Image (cartoon, rainbow, N blue to C red):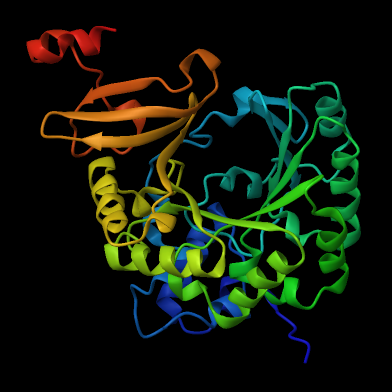
Amino acid sequence: MSHRVRYITKVEQIRGIDSSERDVCNLVAQKYAFRANDYYLGLIDWSDPDDPIRRIVIPQPEELHEWGEVDASRESAVTVGHGIQHKYADTALLLCNEICGAYCRYCFRKRLFMNGNDEASKDVSEGLAYIRAHPEITDVLLSGGDPLLMSARRLDEIIGELQSIPHVKTVRIGTKIPAFNPYRILEDEAFQDVLRRRSSWRGRIYIMAHFDHPRELTEPAIESLVLMQSLGAQMLNQCPLLRGINDDVDVLVEMWEMLTNIGCPQYYIFQNRPTIGNEPFMLPLVRGFGLVNEARKCVSGLSRRARYAMSHASGKVEMVGIDDSFMYCRYHRAKDPRDDGRVLTFYRDDEAIWLNDLQPIDLADVPQEFSARYST
């Protein structure tokens, strides 16, 4: 039986909220776009005002607080052409679609869905030319927007072009469609054929899924992940740590164990970016590290691989330790190759939410027995 998922772009179409909440949601949606669908809205417990699925897609008045930056990770600084970013030497990012299956309220690229923005481009010819001219690029991430909202034919064309470039070894697809609308995968035989033909050891396709909460892992969602694996795709999950959604050890443990068993293990658990509108979802780094660390203690080694990291302008900065006095970070990936693997030490700050909030240590404050280590 075919499942027709109906997309919703007007707050008036949301069932389950009263008129006063609808008025507030409309005010927010005038600034930050709203989009959802009846499948995903059907996962919400409307009797619970704090329902985590509700918080993911239903506009909240706190989003209107004057807070955050439009481009918190300075993606503009690594944009090298229309729709293409090149931050790390071996990886390029193609913004090949400007629409998502739904709009997460905490989105770090909500600027793409604001009037007048044309960063994403369905015409990827400029990006492909750039990749061809840069043999150091071995890994390309398709993002946006959500690439799995494109037609299978168009997706096949883009992947085929990339795989025709000798130095491109892997193609990644960043998507939340398995959570937002798994039937797009389960019922599209043309898309299934793309994976079957395009993903092999000669040119592997990785699906970078985005599940925020175990309640998104419905039976159809799980079936979509298993199907894509059977067609040759490799599966990984990444998501931010979000206040009121997954900032709970039991929730993280349940999600990580489910994902590992499905064959889609957690890759990154990100510190949510301090983007405009994101204040209601932010957690201090100290609390975030504590949650991730406690969750790791409750799962097997296969589920402990996720890195808690910030996608900072300077690179992916992993939180690796906290003690009574200091916070320790490490560049897992760095925009400047000289920073790769570099360890950073800061004074402990229980309120800090981003790397920019942290104060580097003064060596004079380091105990003498450790000063040699910190001065190297």
